[in-house]
Length: 272
Image 1: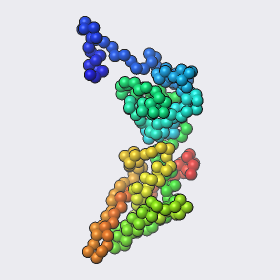
Image 2: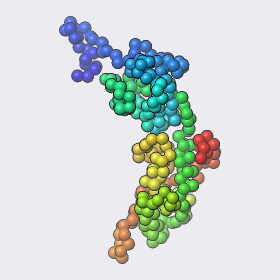
Image 3: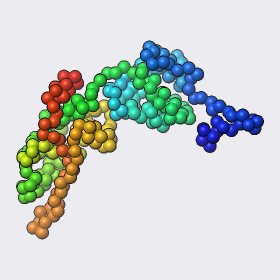
Image 4: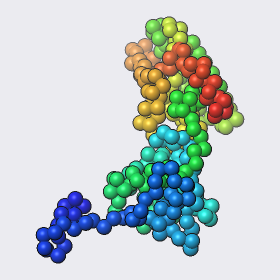
């Protein structure tokens, strides 16, 4: 039975509505309160008194939803959500608390989770206020520094087929290469208009090596779309002459991206 229906039923049968018992403290902090007030409210919510290692601080690594956020307990234990957007979902919020802290889950509503997420966000110190576009630019600048570049014309069917085959071979090599060996996967510059083509799986691997925690394809694709990157796929069928099937799933990077001021902000604010 849903909470909404349960609220309308009378437990004693006298026809009067019954109020659902709240899972939250009877009071709530106000916007702009000192950090200690948010910590106090969260500790009361989860019953974390002085004997149960209370929460004393928090940290977050960006304002966007896929940034990591951490609660710090008095013992120094760091309770970490890879994406702070997870806090707004009752299951995602409580799964980390249950597995890392042993806190028994509550039957929270969506609104309850949002209020708790707000309190955690207000408690946490912002460790990195990086604009999402600047962060993508930083990923790209690092990527360019670690990959060779080739020039090609996709309208040159024979030459383009050869390049796609070399791309596939380079990717296969990089999957088994030693740590000290240079990467062979390369960036392609289109001779027609200067746009850059990047193998999707290679760039995704690179980004996941830079960010704190994992990043889904959905999140990564969304972030890159905001930066005006496109996606495409090149493929060539096998031929009667014996040339194999070749393909590549790619990100398309505009030829004038990033703008100089964005690149400068990324390298100075975050550091390379």
